[in-house]
Picture: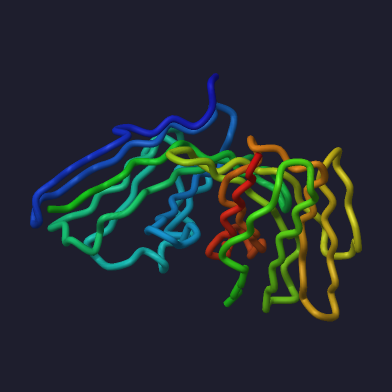
Length: 114
Length: 109
């Protein structure tokens, strides 16, 4: 296992199109997180899963954003009807369950909406 | 919710010590973290401190926590050019992290 893997690394899309990103966590990690990072800012939490259950989704930016983790392994983040303001780096992280377990981050998917 | 503030930029010479500062608002954060991000890369956990500790040392890294002032600092001894990166402090919520905007550290030879 080489760590958290995200695909694609870069995505350019036209405004109004839908995009989907994939995250493969470290295999034994039961928690998976999505963050968004815009230029000059720190990562901003979006949502997280424990196994297949989405335990927090109130911080998803709008109803155009949705995430799934159907079998408790990989996860997808979908953005519908993309807007230019959605351009950002989308980071995935995984960890074991627990109060202080290290979250390992993937290298991110950079989205550019034109 | 948690709010985390950091100074945006720090420039040092190779071999000097670097001190990166952070303030946070939520005293209930159980752990406080320092992450490093190099250009085009994800985040790498450098170190963390439990909220009931005052100091933690890990090789060249020293973390100081002032709970009264809600102030966290990261000291890097003998800073090297390879330490040039953006450093984020983060506080732990229930199951999530709240990050500051990051401090860009530039190390010149």
